Amino acid sequence: MSGQLPLMPAIKKLMDEVLSGPSNGDEIEGALAAERKLVAQAKKLGLFVAGSATQKYMQAIQDQQEVMGAIADMTIEIYAMESVVLRTQKMVEQKGEASAALAIAMTRVYLTQSLEKVEAAAKKVIADVAEGDMLRTQLAIVRRLAKHEPFNTIALRQQIALKTIEAGKYQLT
Image 1 (cartoon, helix red, strand yellow):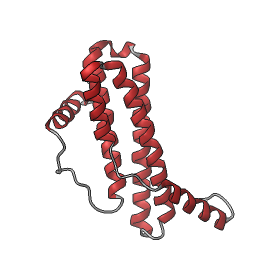
Image 2: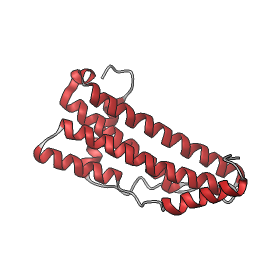
Image 3: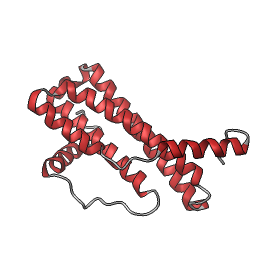
Image 4: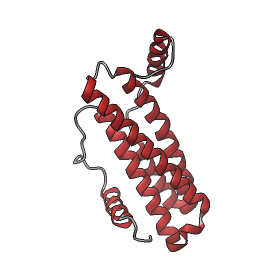
């Protein structure tokens, strides 16, 4: 709201996109496509929640500590998600997908956990800023933005554990 970041235009663009329905124009291809798509969805979710809170509270949003805390938690988690994906993508580009298999497994487990945290924080904020039909509509949007093909985290954790045991220690090279 202070004009330091172009947040309001981004929120407006996302709100227009959400209201117009899902689009197929944002397909992501290449290495770690599913992971990068998950990060993009998490960013949209964060913007949507920030926009909803801003619409309700306007300038008084700075006084809503719990709402701001939840939005900050989402932002931090989304930043970490993107950092993990970018580091793994760099590793894939340098060493190849086969050599980066452990890093990819760890990335997928982390993304799964992080998206759950982001979605939980989003629901907390939406429950505060909306009620009745608007609450149901906004929760449906949250579900749509958080919707993804889940990674098999049980198999991924077993793969990570096996590699850790084989190495005799916990170290990612």
